[in-house]
Amino acid sequence: MKTESHQPWTAEEILALGRSYQGAAVLAAAADLDLFSALSPAPLAAAELARALQCDLRGLTILLDAIVALRLLEKSGGTYALPDGLNAFLTPDGAQSILAMAQHQGRCLRHWAQLGRVVKTGRPAERIPGVRGEAGDQEAFIGAMHNVSAPNADQVIRAVQPLQFQHLLDIGGASGTWTIAFLRACPSARATLFDLPRVIPMARRRLVAAGLDQRVKLVVGDFATDALPPGADLAWVSAIVHQNSRPQNRALFTAILEALAPGGRIAIRDILMEEGRTRPVAGALFAVNMLVATEGGGTFVWGIAGGSGGRRLRWGCLAAAGRSDEFHRRREETWRSLRRRGAIQRGAHPGRASEVRPQVGVWPKTGCCRGRIDLKSSRRARVAQLDRASASGAEG
Image (cartoon, rainbow, N blue to C red):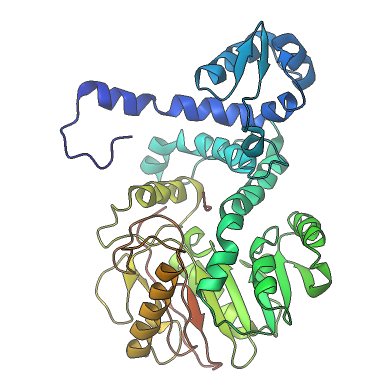
């Protein structure tokens, strides 16, 4: 995709951009069928693979040849095989598996194909399940969030130290990726992971595998409608804000403030855009993902309580006093720490986001910032004014 070049577009480049969905659709279909896992033990002929996957032979053969053309498979003597090393990425148990994210991108493609209608009507795309059904799509989404968070979670938590807490509340904690990272960083702490009924078993499996299940209480609920479990001194809100409209985020932060113990803090991880909301390019496209998938989600730019601009995230009034001096100081300290430890790209700045990677920081209940936000307990605290950067649900 031509995004940074200052050379004029050519007709062929524009047409190539229009065709760029094709390779993505081939990969998504292969992932949705779990084709790579079927080929992981040994090469197979198309007919053998069609029987194993219960697929139409003609359709599968054409798909296999396209995957070979994209160099994600090899073909020899009528059989198809995974190239050396790719099973690490494209099988569920691979050391660096991104299979769940590849499957989730298939769901995104089905949403994006309806973009024109979404823009015309203002309503999100119709949900069309993949070949594994709605439950398979949900499992892929949860797995995809682990795919993108697991490689960076420990590094991000180290970057925002010192971060002392006794009881973490992981809101919408998915399969426990961030809960695990927090508990490894704070060996004396415990956690409550709060998520939907179909997600909790996934979290239980991952926590047992990590040997941390005895330190975590799993609570079933919906943060959009249910009261949050009380008593935590640190609430973690990761990749949730961008899914919500401004009223939804205000309601969420009201619930969090009510649930936190006196002296508690809130930590937020989400996506930042530059002031003009066109850079980074991946962030502008991510806003489209929110548009097609949610009623009112979107990406955000920085803003301060009382600042100008309509479509921005004004964290300064999440709490009662709005203390802008402390807001600026803590924001800059956190960004310096993240840059120093490599958690974000050098040169990135809270007002000049240079990449789409979600960012983090920490503030008191009387003043805050996207990222880690300390919230000194005050039951009279006001909730953040969350102005979204674009009308656009889920990370990835």
